Every structure is written in C-alpha cells, then in structure tokens.
Amino acid sequence: MGQEHSEIVICMGSSCFSRGNKQALGIIKKYLKERGLEDIVLFRGSHCFGECEKGPVLLLNYQKHTQVTPDKVTDLLDAYFSGS
Ligand code: FES
Image 1 (cartoon, protein in one colour):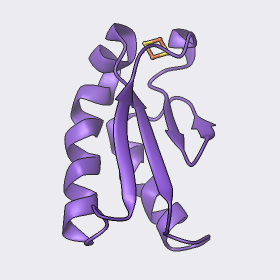
Image 2 (cartoon, rainbow, N blue to C red; image 1 turned 135 degrees about the horizontal axis):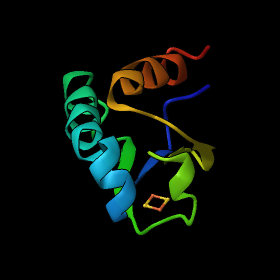
Image 3 (cartoon, rainbow, N blue to C red; image 1 turned 120 degrees about the vertical axis):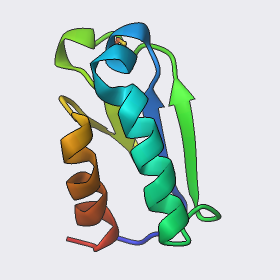
Image 4 (cartoon, rainbow, N blue to C red; image 1 turned 60 degrees about the vertical axis):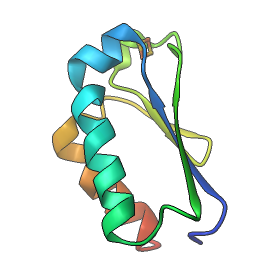
C-alpha cells in the first residue's frame, strides 16, 4: 500500500476521545513526525461517527477501524505504512 495521499481521520467525539483517542492523537502525531510522513499524510479529527459503542474509531484511508485503543495504534500504522 502506498504512502502517498494517505489520510487518517480520528474520531474526536466525546466517547472515543475519553476512551483512548485523546492518547492516540498524540501517538499518531508523533509517529508521523518521526517517520517524516507529516507532509504526505493528511491527519485530521472528526465529529462522532455514530458508532461510539465500537470505539475508539479511526479511519485509515477511508477504511474504518474500530476498538483502536492507544496500545493498538502503532501496530495498525506499522501494518499500513509497511505495506502489509
Ligand atoms: S464518539 Fe467516536 S463514534 Fe461516537
């Protein structure tokens, strides 16, 4: 999977935010910065996706990932950006 034109959208709704996306936000920012991906990956927050019970939720290139707790974020990004 290519790294260009990637987009990460993190749910900033109150449920996801309090259940882990507050921490995930910092983890993702740091991840992109450390790997020099800030210029090619659009990273933004979103309002509630309406799937709070499956949260924390984030979108990785339009693909929805649920129950992405902070301890799973790095593995998810590694899998995506390593092309596996
Ligand atoms: S707060 Fe994230 S889906 Fe509702």
